[in-house]
Length: 62
Image: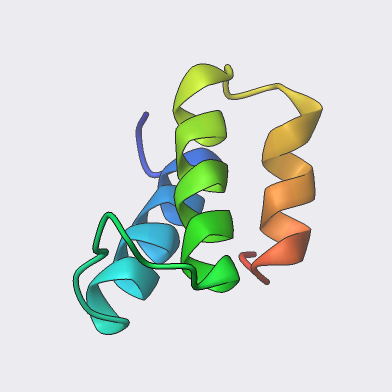
């Protein structure tokens, strides 16, 4: 991952998690759960996977 779209999305998701505080195992915050799930999905796909574009649109990464 260079400075491509996938890297920018990953950076934004990590920044959101850091700004929202530590994720506790017992938290039920659906937003944090969603961000973590999307980060895991992003790490599993290739740079040209359509999911990368979907996540970019969801998190407003250009």
